Amino acid sequence: LPGKLTTVAKHTLFRIPFLGRLLKASGVVPIERPSDAKDADASRVRNAERISNLSSILAQGGNVLIFPEGVTHADAGVRRIRSGAARILLAALREAETSGLPRPNVVPVGLHYSESQRFRERAAVVVERSMVLPELPPLVPDLKQQDAANRKWVDDVTQLFSTELQRVNL
Image (spheres, one colour):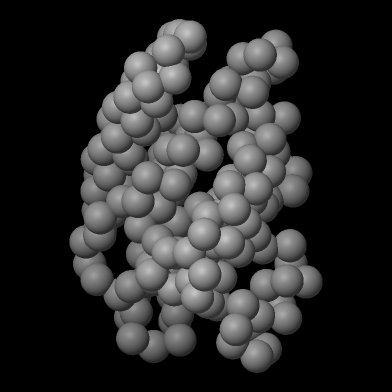
């Protein structure tokens, strides 16, 4: 991919001695899963800031690599898609729209390993075309109504991500 690629990974990977230093040096952004956090409230605050930063990177034309399942696994199929990628995208689309910038694109990518139990012997990378996304929910003054519309959009886009990843999963 042209330009800088910002990668997102679960924060527990940063605890692995050599890997953690490598991830930090590479500029990987840690995201804390509530189930792994010692202090859930502090974790939410840190994640909100990181999600905001990732959204700004996308809105300004940057590239973000995220694994929306939230886990690494050797299963042949796609696991449940988490909503984080869609939440990041919603904020990025809103920021791009208000700043007059082009809309960010989403490109599904599939990773297929010949023998996932071995140290990533061979891999095939399948890059799909950009996804067609639903229109953003209109901005309304009622915060509850806006939150409900945003949540529905995030749910719909998360389902689209799931469908696309199942398709790219061969």
